[in-house]
Image 1 (cartoon, rainbow, N blue to C red):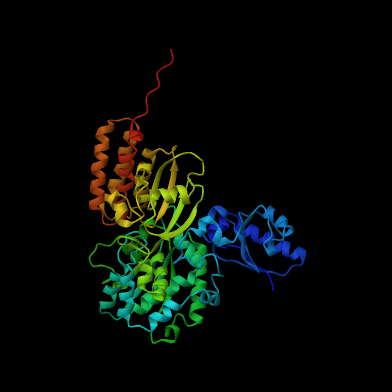
Image 2: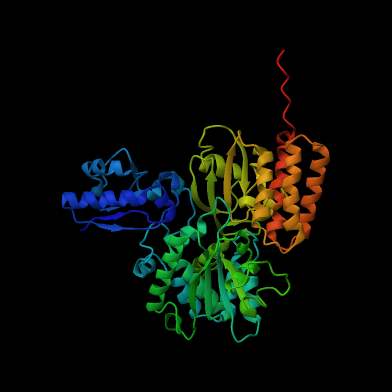
Length: 518
């Protein structure tokens, strides 16, 4: 049996040196005259252990990591092709605590198989959901997705089934499925991991959406900062098309569905669904007023389903295992699993898929292992650059859309950024306003002007100029932005600003003036 060596080729692992490790292993194999197959899989998401190299042995897969090129010679000397012990030895990947504690549904295959092998995808349960969908009436597919409780994983948490039913019920000569892969939030990488590590699950999810709603064309809108994801998705679409997964007869059924990949220029506001549609149409990425909703009048004026990568990639498991299976996970109105992306000043950074309901403290302290610096955790920002800052006093909040909303927070795209006690929360509040000012599309006044005035006012607070008066002004400004902005960019910017002001008021006090030496 030819040994199989798995080395992640996803951009997160590449950033940590996976390419150099792959070259060192290939060189060592050649030098020793050993025949082996190197498989470039996706990452499992335990980025604190990347580059993580796995070897398929008679007793199962054995992982080593984080591997450096300088470790390669000694790995071979230790017999790593048969799972031999070494200082980088991690044992069976699914027994690594960070991975063993997860509930992997959407990411079940990520980091395991060759991302471009459709046979490997099928061997791990792929295409079963689509096979079931093409044998059902469209309304029954929509019903199953609705009953599963799946909500938009892009941040809004809107029920997916309602969107799909609206498009199914709409009458039009053409309908579209648009996948929002413009993953612009800091500390988020779940979309990228799926596209680079298991692209067929997204293709399958989009095809099911097409079958369910009567849409015959799909677009995946990916930001230009994701060149590896763009390349992987383009290649995967070609493979799927040749295999009959896409085309005039999806899996041999009467349903037609094809798709293509489009690349955005990287504007943060194009993550907002109507800006994204404008960009797709070749227009400037500015927000559209709603109504009409995209489900009624979306891309090129036609009924359009717009879902995030994770929403669409979660559909195949629902169509395979059933609505009740998926709904069994989670809490309250938040059903199924959520890929939590742990980043910032944290010991164990990476992707952790779990059912809704874990507390923020469990995620940060138990899973994340606290700060990388070893200092106390001061704040955790959940939901990207427009998410609220939570202090340790709120760490008992369960990971659930409604529970976070009750504490004036957002789950968003489930990105978590950890800060230690050296963080200056006034500077973080200023950053939120500055970020909004830079990324605003300029269409509405509260966002365009409000964010600029917000930066100026916070600078006055930092300079000790009438602090209480200016804090009141920032509060009033945030209220105007929250309720007056056309989209979530201006509407959500108040979350980080107001949470910093509410929970970390001491950081907004002017620094004491040092007394002159006698």
